[in-house]
Picture (spheres, rainbow, N blue to C red):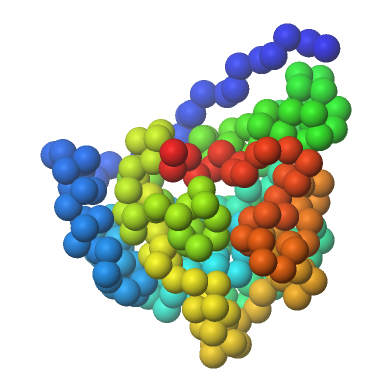
Length: 249
């Protein structure tokens, strides 16, 4: 096996724009102010404050569909980043194509900088079984890092009820990378999301109907047992709980 190679450096340039003088103080004040705000109020705040310096990335889970619908109601067109690991379910990719055709969204697909063969030569074959953290690092986190600093803030569809690892997220916060994250659906529940989806007749991944409540790569996603949190079907053969995209601590 070859020696591990360093990950590519971030090369994209962030658009210029006004920045808070004290980001931490600004976020702390905003988090308290937005704690009881509605999802639409939080989105409106984010769009007013960051405009085209606000990024959106989605894996097309049902919460992401809700957030995307709220965004498209406010924007004539917008870009959504999608990380293509090479191991998505066909149903996920079919949903992406359907949304791109029907909604005012341009999907930007990000893939690993290295080929599958190169990744295997570094961390070994079937790394999702032997080294799942490194597998996610090369196939998911590295593509994200290439665009992370091109925006001043990122909006995402995380909810507190999804898992214990997300139970304390604030509507707006700095993650451990120092990235500003905005979570308009933080206080929503799964029931809230499905009520919204049914009320607006939104398309979703058909795998949700088969018990796949959180959907990632084929190798690391399984149906959830009733009573478990919705991310219990991820990385079931290891103690891993998050892929590394959302480093909330």
